[in-house]
Image (cartoon, rainbow, N blue to C red; front, side):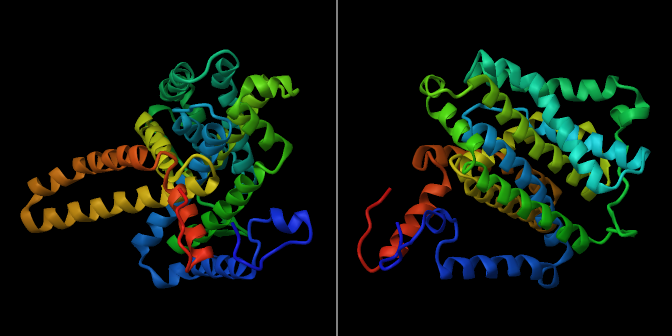
Length: 353
């Protein structure tokens, strides 16, 4: 739905995401705010947002596999870990620069995902979800069993800092801008994927794989593509995470983290990359707010009361996810679309859902 008086003379203009002047201005101001944020916010908030950017890339990849192709993946954290360890090893042991380690991490995660995506050729739904859980179980065992000289074993691996033209990015705001560039790039890729032949095929497989097969879509090929591309996003997220935290261990990449990735996608909405962005921002903000509440409670009432707040975080977030599933099954994206439609036809009443 567009405001009255807005029309297009060609398909390219109509298909654009930013189709009006106010939309383009709002996006420019939003990007400008992201650029100026480190100058206005404290180091802690900048650090939280930097990690949120990394998480957002992983959830965008999950949206491709789960939201666009309709295949449940509960092993995304394992693919993030593959990217982190491959990038850390190449950077620390071979001295590779980031512009080589990031593609290598993406490729390693993508190839490893194919091993667990192969069952998608035969099974779907709950059984496929169990198969992806196997990736999460095998990952830490594999890292521990491989030669310590490769990935550091169960002790983990230190990560050399990012270096650009001989300058090491060690300050918080430098890492912020570095990750901001990549999250903008991968957001653009995620939004434009569904406009491509591959994206349309993935959506067809999700909606009705039998009908898609009749129309000539190679179901098996595109299912593997969905796993591969989604895991490539995860691999890049893992490499960036390694550069941010400077040390990677298997403890960073748990099944619990994979569940949080899925939760972010559910809360935001699976139907669009915008849902992945909304979910990541909302869950991260809620987590940090509850942690701040726990710290304040511990300082005022003692460590025992504060210790109660931290486990309650998971309960609160669990209740939020249940509420979203009950009242907004398609996530916060539904409310956003309704709000936009209501704004565009104001002051007339809008009853859309």
